[in-house]
Image 1 (cartoon, rainbow, N blue to C red):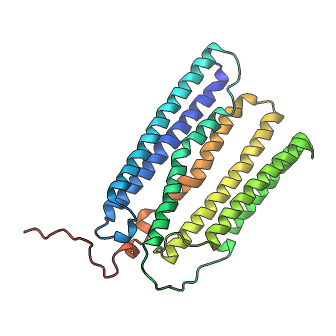
Image 2: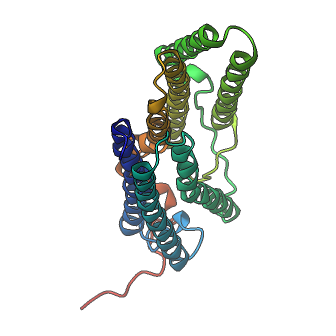
Image 3: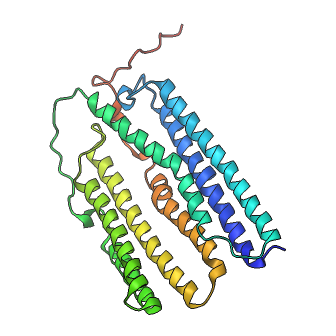
Amino acid sequence: MIDPNNFYFYIIFLIQILLASWYIPTKILNRMKTVMHEYPPQQYPKLYAGSIGAYNKLQQRYQMINRILFTLGFSLLSAIVMWDYTTQGNINVMIPWAYFMIQMVPLMWLEIKEFKYFKAMRKGNTNTKKSATIIPRKLFDFLPQKLFGFAIVMMLGAFSLVIKQYGFKGNAIESIMIILATNLFFAGIIYWNIYGTKLDPYQTSEDRIKVIKVTVKSLVYVSIGVSIFLGAQMLIKLYDLDFLKPSVMSIYCQLILWASVGNRLKQIKIEDLDFSVYKTDDGTELNPKPAQD
């Protein structure tokens, strides 16, 4: 018989499947198609570092991979339900995390493609003029101080719960070191975004600042999510609520996805970006269509 305590997990894991393998991919695909439709290569040739066929193929592959993962998710959920019906025991807490890592493969693949795309764009940039633009170079130019302070408070709060649970030894030190290492990694990404080389050679300073602000905030949101997750794990141990572990893990995965990718899609809207920089230098169309009688 199905354990009633696991119903929470089934609902939450179903949301994970829909969010990471349907909703977010659909948003990304619609964004790609909108850019290609609204800003075609004839009018915005600098935006395209490859053929239209290659971009269409990339979109088709991305959609196909996510459809496979979507089907895999429902198959996995069905298998867990059947296992729960015939067996008494707790659902493995690592199942939602393992599936989440698989769900992230298409996004990581897109990230690699994006880096190659910007590399080709920089290689094809024949403009030798360098424009001197002043952009902010301090962390708090991109991040509200209150949000930064809240992230620090949440991290310290999670540390206090860890120490309360384990004492300042063994597991506590290991957990604290992992969180510190994670946040140092985030800090490195933030530093690279603020001080690193501009990936898109045509991007305006205003758009770059906008993208950096969203990226920095997203990483801080993820940091807060990590602290919340660690604190939740300690509370589960403290109150002996082990049956909630798989659900909390799935929620944690969804928070990471929404704080990073979801927030970026919401905050950086296509219509708010300046695409005029991708036109030809004289503003004419590339291979314009013949006039119709």
